[in-house]
Image 1 (cartoon, rainbow, N blue to C red):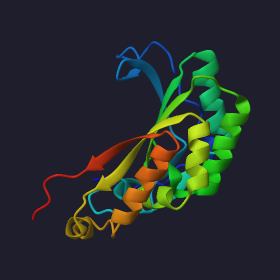
Image 2: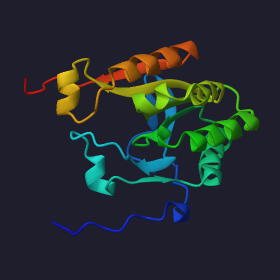
Image 3: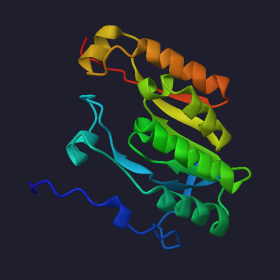
Amino acid sequence: HNPQGELLDLSRLKLPIRDKRRLTRGYHIVNRSAEVIETSRGCTRSCNFCSIRHMYGRSFRPFPTERVLADIDDIYLRRRCRRIFIADDNMVLSPPRVIELCRAIVDRGYRGLHVDVQADCVTLSRNEEMVALMARAGFRSIFLGIESVSRRNLEAAQKGDILDASRKAVELCHRHGIMVVGGIIFGFPD
């Protein structure tokens, strides 16, 4: 058992090396080539089933916007890949940051960009401007941690009562043309 390490300063991390040395021939989502990026690490939510808080504590650390844009440029311009999966633990914890990033993506004028991401229902449900900008920036699907429609199960998972937020988040995504992939947990003790 190693002691917990220091959290890395994300502004000092270089762009990943994307070349043919991987054992796989790149990433794919359904039948399309895709690349994977991070725009942040960590999550401040208290869901008791998630391992992220054991890795980073309850912290949220974004990469600098310019670094994220350089990563997208590398994927879109140099690698000519049009599908990006953002592997953040919960990208939307800072709506002003997401809005800034989406405006910058829109300003770059990427054509045919398809972005998939994971996000929480509560933040999405409270930020329609952010959801609309995400759609304009090319976000086509969002994995939402809905977890359960049972208030008792949500309480057991320490998610809080997110039923209304889940409904609202799905409604906002659909209103702006974003497909929702709902994460549901089966196998609660009760």
